Length: 304
Image (cartoon, rainbow, N blue to C red; front, side, top):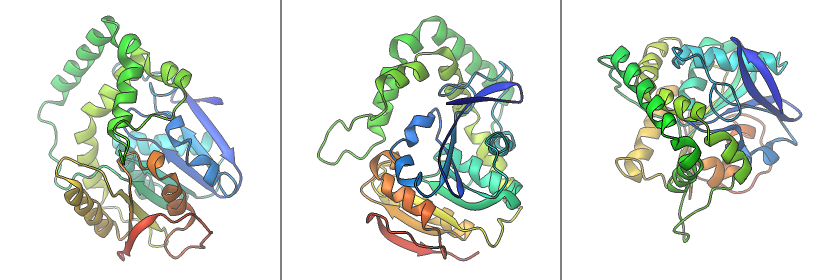
């Protein structure tokens, strides 16, 4: 377990394994340990870098008036790789909201990108900018202060985390799929006001980051960088499973990416089908293939 200062903020950093580098970035409000099922599958072949964004996991909070931005998160990935001593191009892997961040990194740092894997990434096809961002930020900050002052994080933070994880996993025959994260780590990460404030800030600026990504897409992805969109085959989504897969495949078409479906899996693919995530990283399109467990139910490649 390592802590490094990035822009004056102590960030929690974790490095495992050996070999070509891959960086794993978790979704909104999530922590480094949410990748735990994937890491043992990668570590024999890859150097795996994980980190917590400010306020999440074990990282210190950002300054009160600092809000997440898309370019800021892309630059954060670059600084994390610097702190990890990475001097060669890395495969960047983003889940959910972090899919925005990793795609932005690939566009802003093409020379540092060996591959891009989007794991059930957030998709906003026609995002609209917030009408009153200053008012929204003030309201979000006030909400965080009110909830923290009422003791919500300590009283309910770990319970809310586990409830959210269970809701985002594939149920199968189990009506309450469990959260595999150790209880003590969940308590350390989610019983604090900093984690609550960080999650609220990421949620509040989600639309801003989606709009920024649309503009950033004027910068082409490098032609020689393999891109994979790995979609959850059982993600309920707001429009139903088929509509969600349609959104994901259109994202793959837009990026000229290989489209893979992981099934059965809910939104937290790394917990439901970690072997599929590992295969997407180790077996990129047109890349060397390593033996891996059966996973994807379908695969299609869209050319850039």
